[in-house]
Length: 232
Image (cartoon, rainbow, N blue to C red; front, side):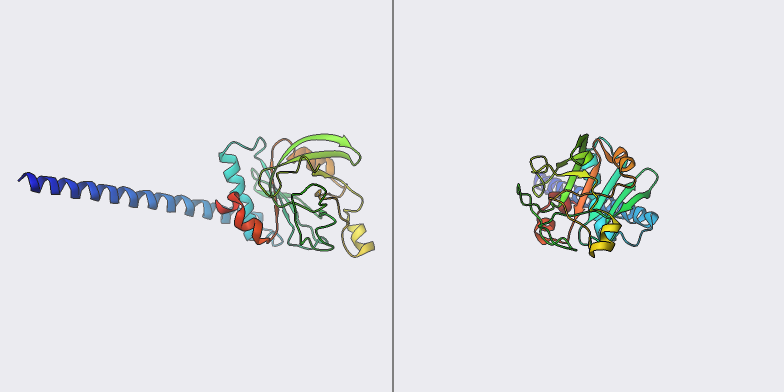
């Protein structure tokens, strides 16, 4: 009788553990599906064919991870730069996540050693004059040789030297559509995501002080190594 009781108890414990694990897995799948559906729904609301869903998905889910870790002081805005696009295209997208719309889109320069029309090479090294991929957090503004500028803090292995390299958002005459018309491509920086002067102050005022910026490329080394991408 005692033996029968012990076996019955063991079966009950095993069944309970299995049931808990199944419920736990189901719960995780449910959360993942909810996040996935939320990402798709928001993307559809943005209704911008130039912003690829894959790029937006990486950026938005990384943003959610940073927000849940309390790493963003300004969580209203998410900025995305798609470096897989030609520099002649408007590849900067600034998204207002409260109103759920893209509030600004423009051309943006890449580093002079990253490529000509297309950015193909990326580096986190000082004096590389290349763009750096990954998630950034916007910081404080200052006035330098390019006028009003916005400092960036790199949040990943791929851009951790942003401060040391003085990678900032600033305006530049070579980052304009007029420059493209005259030269066949956008001008290039020393690694900074340089923007046109038009509406520049308004842009900086929105995204400064702790919002997320994601610079994307289809670079396999980055995509396979980023912890924030892996969390998607």
